[in-house]
Every structure is written in structure tokens, then in C-alpha cells.
Amino acid sequence: MAASEDFRKLFELALPDHAVDSDRIPWVPQGERVWYKPLRFDLANGRWVNLLKVAGKGKVNRHRHSSQVLGYCIQGSWHYPERDWIARPGTFIYEPPGDIHTLVVEGADDMITLFLLEGVIQYLDDQDNVVSQDDVFTKLDRYHAFCQREGIEPVDLRY
Ligand SMILES: [Fe+2]
Image 1 (tube, protein in one colour):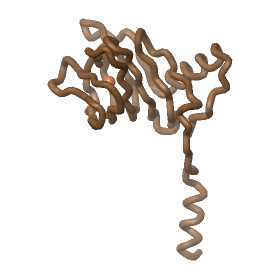
Image 2 (cartoon, rainbow, N blue to C red):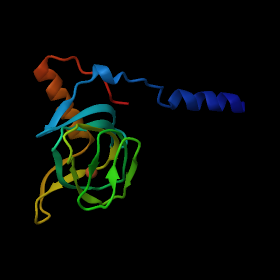
Image 3 (tube, rainbow, N blue to C red):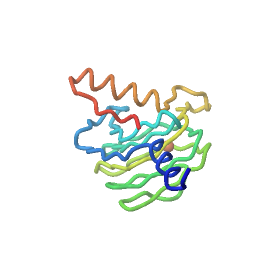
Image 4 (spheres, protein in one colour):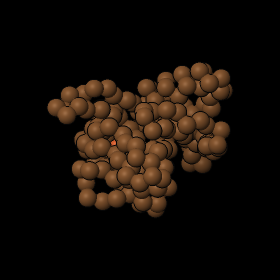
């Protein structure tokens, strides 16, 4: 078999390209003053991509990630009380597996950040007990349930 034919067969196995119009996807409530807009659910690898929006003075409760997190702040500013940096538009964030933090928006403005996540997010109480947890499947379920409640046709983001 010629080398070029080998490559052609490999490309047939590969995931095709996707272009997602985020304007077609709703902001799904995640908590008080917190919403997410999913962009990708990679069920084969337990990964997902979403925009996170937190209204002014809002926060995401203290949690632990089982895997790395990558983020890029698009709008507004936020910080983790557990860290000494502040995310502003243009800040790129890497969080190692096992990181525990609380996402706080101090200002009055909404913040929007793109996050690339994988594995499990465990929400913790003050004694480090797991209160609830999320993964690619719970994020997908919540997106579909919200669309159904609101009468919205969900965009298929499983790729
Ligand atoms: Fe986090």
C-alpha cells in the first residue's frame, strides 16, 4: 500500500472539523450568578470546553479539579482567594491537576472566560467533604435538560 493511501485512511478515521456558532448556544445556569455556554463535549476523552460567565459580585464555590484546566479571560476580571494573581482580559490560565480554588468576581462587571476542562470537578465544603461533582456527562445532561425546559433545539456538541 502506498504511503499516501495510508495517510488517506488515517484521515478517514480522524474527527472531522467543526465550527460552532456560540450565538446559537444558550447560557445554561450553573449556580447563583453563574452560567456556562458549552462549546464541545468530548465524551471519548472526558473533556469539555465552555465559556463561563459570572455576574458581578458572583462566585463559583470552592472546588477541586482531577485534571488540568486551561483558561483564557475574555471579559471582566476575577481571582482565586487561594492565589495571588488576577485574571483580566487576555490572561491565560493553567491550573494543575488537584488544584483547589474558589472563583470570585469582586467588581460589578460580568466576567467571561473560556475554559478547557477534563476529568472531574468536586465541589467541597469547609471540611473538604465532596458536596457535589461535575464531569463531561453531567455538563452535557444539564445542557440538554435546560434546552428541553426552554424549548430550544440543542446544538449537537458531542465531538
Ligand atoms: Fe476551577
